[in-house]
Image (cartoon, rainbow over all chains, first blue to last red; front, side, top):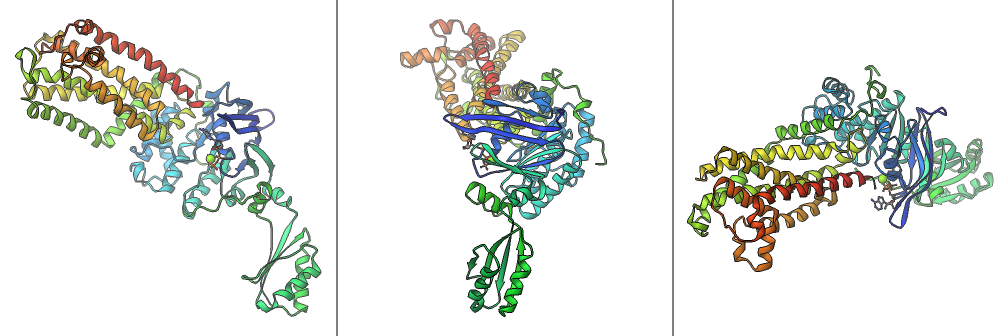
Length: 321
Length: 274
Ligand SMILES: Nc1ncnc2c1ncn2[C@@H]1O[C@H](COP(=O)(O)OP(=O)(O)OP(=O)(O)O)[C@@H](O)[C@H]1O
Ligand SMILES: [Mg+2]
């Protein structure tokens, strides 16, 4: 580890494909033992940065250090200390789950006996021991993902790269993978996680870097990023559609911000800054005007709101599993 | 975590591991065969089927030079053709590992960059030995015989395997530079002209002059011609310089191919990092 305690340092990374830059001045710093979520639209450069940091891709400019070693000059030192779980599972489909893990263990030079022992431990830990002897070709998507994760941590890596680890999984599969990742995080591994699912970043990441067009355009804790949007919103639904106009008038009277109205849902939404007390004032005003409220919530901006604000478009819709 | 994890510190990174890693990856290849012998058995069955088709179906259609036994004429061509059609096995295996991300996984691990290529070559050569053994047995069964004595026979077998070894490196290179279905098409467009523009089944003398020259200089023809001589089987003869020197060419051609395609493959593998 470097003296500064950073497990990943990237400075001014550039990567060019023909005439365009996939990375163009990409800076990143991830402290040891923390989880960094890389968010960004398709083609932003997330996979490219992960491939450079995991020594798979040569960089055209800048420098990068992982686990204290330079990715260009000391790639093998880096490779002994990282785990990589790519966007698609990379497994030998003909071999069993156990054989895959033994193979990778031996390629990490654990020796035959220790590789076998480690394979057993990992199968158990990822809940795969009952299917360990079956060829991977017969595994479900979630099982493959978990085996892929297990393969990424044969040596208890100092730094783990996860490139969209739950893409294409159903909610249950996603949950299984999250549980596995959380366990790793508890063990002190530094994680760099790219994802299309904002809730995934919210759930797992200590800090988030938003990537667009090959560079990091915003960085911070999820809460800090949300706070940038200027605080909370009240969302309320009136019981009777006839009351909607009255409700909007009352909200306008109490709150400075201009409310937005969704007539179909009989809903009114308004930004209230950091004034949580505004909720009480709005409800009191509505009560006085005898407007019946079916539902009301004070809601934090979501990462999706942050993403929209920063990049000008919504994050990718949840892929239907 | 309950179990103690081996960490990088326990290991001795940086030790030259090309040999160990190659061994491990050959183990992988053998484990795949044990798990899933279907394709191998099918490939061997196909080989036998082709021998039977050529031996019994086309038997009468060919005029054997010097009036010798058709099946004795046939078999050296069959041995060598089968080695040539093995290129696609190699190419597809290499392309599949690239496609499935296995190659990337290995490249992100402290695995010697030579090991995956060496292991591929070794694994495919093991299969080539098995295939050739089956072919020799099939040949004997349909009446083919070697007449040149033990040394000459071993020499012929050696030349056939040497050609296969050279073609393994051609196949590895093709697998590294092409993707998916393109790999299959590319390698088959190579196999057919290489296989048939030769002296394996047709006399180069009966071809148009330029085709005849190509056939005479085809690396395959050198091995077929040389093994016919060593097995004491009938052949076409021919008065081109190449035809007069087949035993030499059967050694020089494969070495030249390895000298070109092995370094190209290694360089290409290193260039996967862009
Ligand atoms: N091998 C390649 N050749 C040419 N261009 C490439 C190559 N790989 C990536 N790119 C380009 O580089 C840019 C960044 O791609 P990258 O895969 O890093 O994006 P990403 O953020 O991972 O996107 P996604 O969310 O779709 O996975 C894209 O414009 C992409 O088209
Ligand atoms: Mg990507």
